[in-house]
Structure formats: structure tokens, C-alpha cells
Length: 241
Image (cartoon, rainbow, N blue to C red; front, top):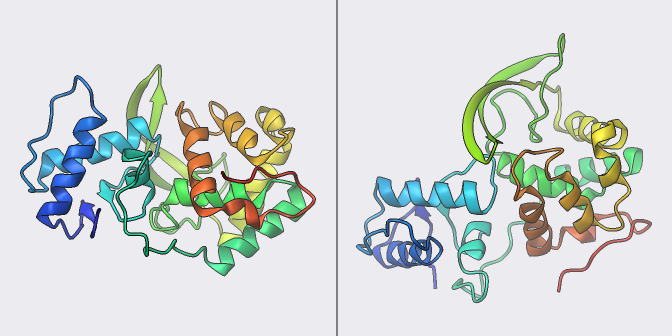
């Protein structure tokens, strides 16, 4: 059972570190194993980031494993060793309202928008500074922008590039633009025609993001936090098992 955070900026209690090191070793068959020493050094943090990027498809790995968090659930998917009393972090009302307004205007499920907010920006913590842009929307010529580093996957290899990200006056406007892009741009037609939210997430893989695990990561987030409940009733949804 993980009692506290492990990794970059974590509490790094020795027993918790040993647990995470063991889980990482179990998920890295054939790789160079970590020493189960209870010390969260550079090699352990690097292994966490690599797992988040390669196995989970997170675009901005933070190198941190938290009790009840998505990374721990991915490391121990069968029987997560987390305290039963750990509550799910609530979704801010402002984010729910922005996602539902965008769904009403453009038909993109609120569950999808909120899951992308979580995945793309780490619940708003990792947006490009000063951008109000949690979706990684790139800036077109003439649009306000900020420059930030981002990870992309090309030919199966992860690379870090500097990119121009759209700058929005408010989070609500970012959600509205996100909905407009998905609803009107040809690459997302198949996603907009999806029968349910899980299928919608899968169809964003290779179109919205280059990472091959993008859809799976979105589904894990929607299921883990039951984001389907935020959808408008008129849209078919998939209930988590």
C-alpha cells in the first residue's frame, strides 16, 4: 500500500520508494532493473518518467507517483496497492462548466474535454505559462502564442521540440476553441461520429496526438474518475465496469 508520493518532489518515504521500484521493475521485463534500496534518486525518477511517457502515453510526464493516482493504477492495474480511504480529487466547477458549455455548443462530450484537460495539462498545473491553454492547441500564423517545450512521437521515437501554443484570454475560451476544432476539422470526423466516449477517445489517437497510447490514457482517466457523469444525457455514454 502506497502511503505517500514517490518521485520528483514527492515525500519519498523509504518503504513507498521500495514499492514503486518493485512495481517499475515488474513492468520493465528485460530492462535494466532498479535497485530496491528505498532511495528515490535520479534513476528512479527517470524510470517513473519513462513509464509515464512510454507505457501511459502522457505527453508531459511529471516523474511522480501518488496514492490513488493514475500512474500507480497503471503500475498496479490488477490490485492497486492504495489506501481505500483516498478520495478522488474533485474536478473544479469552472472546468466542468466550461466543458459542458463546449459540449452544448459543439457536441464534444464533456468527459472527453475534461479527460484531455487532466492528461494534457496535469489538471491545469502544466499549461504553457501564460497561455490558458490546457489542450496543447498549436497557434496558427497571426494568433497570440507562447513558446514551450513538448514531447512528440515520430516513427515510434519520442522527441522534445519547441512549439508555439495558442494563448487564450480565459479557460472557458480555450474549452470553446477545443470543441470547435474537434467538431469542424476533418481529421476528427470519425471521432465526432463515435458511438460512445471510449470510442471517441480511441479515434483521437493518431489525429489529436501522435502517441499510440493516447486513447487508452484518456479512457483510463474517464473510467477512474467516472467523468462520463458530466456528459449531457442526450449523448450515449459508456459506464465504467
